[in-house]
Length: 82
View (cartoon, rainbow, N blue to C red):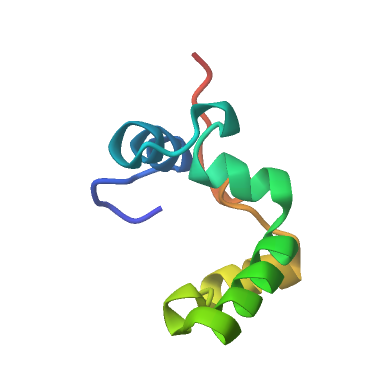
């Protein structure tokens, strides 16, 4: 991943739980995406965007990841085991 505040999928999961209050039982926003599936997420987000506005439209990157069966965790260069 690129340098920045969020440098791994794990950082995004932890940040979404402690920063946004994302449901802890989900494992975080990235783990939730892995659970529901990127294709399901993209389809649902498109329906929301059609109904409620473009802010719900998934990014081209998420759309490509869904099409290729990828995930942020599968794309991570290193997975830490604690």
